[in-house]
Image (cartoon, rainbow, N blue to C red; front, side, top):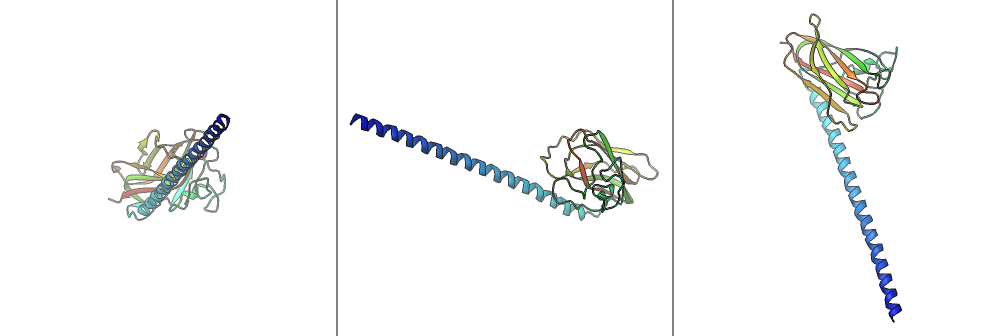
Length: 213
């Protein structure tokens, strides 16, 4: 009887241990599933926020999109136009990159992590500017300086520094707000430190905001 009782106790302990392991696995899976849902909800919220900003900025009567673009370098090399993937001309007009990632509909420099790169963007209407909105679609965070200028005016630095925002591999706008420029401007120069953020730092569109008076 003692042997049988001992065997039953051992069997019972083994069964309890197995159940504990199964319960722990279920709890772990449940926590993992909850975390994945939170992350998915967070990503969707960020995507929705960008879409809402796109709608808001497209409807801004004081905003205008790029009419012509010059760059320090481009992955398109000598090719130009909207049909040339990653060319300077990809920044012309309204945003058209709908998801984060390497996309030929955005501008990209010839090389990655080389150091200083720049884009110079021209707009049809000179305005007293108060804001520049840069739509970054791949490896954002490399912008180090933004200047505005007009036909008769010297470049004016409206933002300079290190972008410390954590983008977590998502599309986003870099928005520089500043006091109204002293004279009308119709060009924006954006300098990037490509070493600051690894990979191609792609820009889809840039909006200049301001009024004619």
